[in-house]
Image 1 (tube, helix red, strand yellow):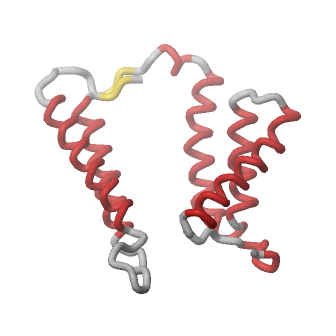
Image 2 (image 1 turned 180 degrees about the horizontal axis):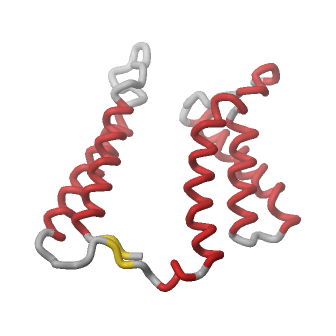
Length: 155
């Protein structure tokens, strides 16, 4: 599937603006000049600049807004395409209630199942990847992740 560069640029620009606006809502870190929203805001600014560049490069190209690719006629690939977005929506709505561990394991397990990872490897891989991501964010980067229903065993 090919999107016109002007349309792609507009999407990237809007995502960048959304990231910047969301980063501004992050609380400031006590005693630090750089808060948790600093790097996301820089990334959002990069998205905005890239979106503008894409819009400029696609101006007047005459290309169609959307050109479906061969893969869009294959039901399994379309299912996987839609499933990725549905899984992301699930994560966004479930993570605060269920907590990072449960939501991430479910999220990864569904995607691994959809992309034909051998069945016996799905749960162990999802658990290991979730623990690695949690360690990276919670311990190394000191980003608090929601515990949800596991609040009683939070370390």
